[in-house]
Amino acid sequence: MKGLIIYKGKYGATRDYAALLSKELDLPVFTPTVIGRQLMEADYVLIGSSVYVGKLQLQSWLIRNQEWLKTKKLFFFIVCGTPAGDKEKTDKIIADNIPLSLRNNSILFLKGRMIRHQLSWTDRLLLKMGAWLTKDPEERKRMQGDFDGVGMPALRPLLQALKLWDLEKRQALLHVNY
Image (tube, rainbow, N blue to C red; front, side, top):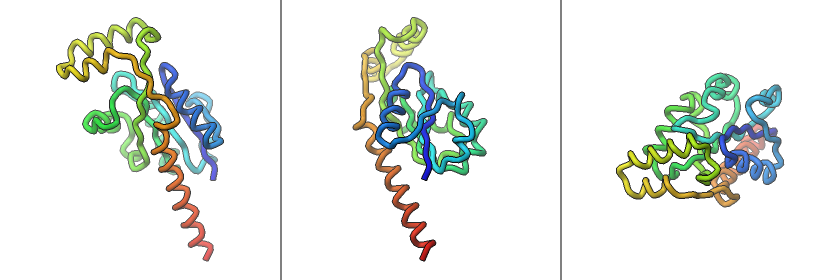
């Protein structure tokens, strides 16, 4: 089966996850500006996007291409600072950014990377204001500290979902052939 990876990020964590997946799965990597007929030929697509101020970097691309994407098996990896266990926030990100017709696919939230001195001054200011407005002291502390969650261990659930889907497809093909 043919697969590919499409990603868009802001500071490099999503690109790094896409590169790790590409190496592990031997899949080509594209940005949304250079993908073309390869999307039509793919059986499955890994879609990576960072979140910036609650919005997926790929939101408008997903909306524009949802008719094509509905015909593919999709595996989303969403890279952000929001903890994957914060169901209220992750559900909101999904609801606000992924078209309803595409939500029946695998969606995994991955911890990104934030190195404050690498952020633009505007983003540092927005982060500082957001932390100042946050009532939860743990959330405030999390927003003010550097973190780097990028690494192969974070991708294990996505790789397991992909392997399970591949196994189910192969078994279905065996049943059709008998």
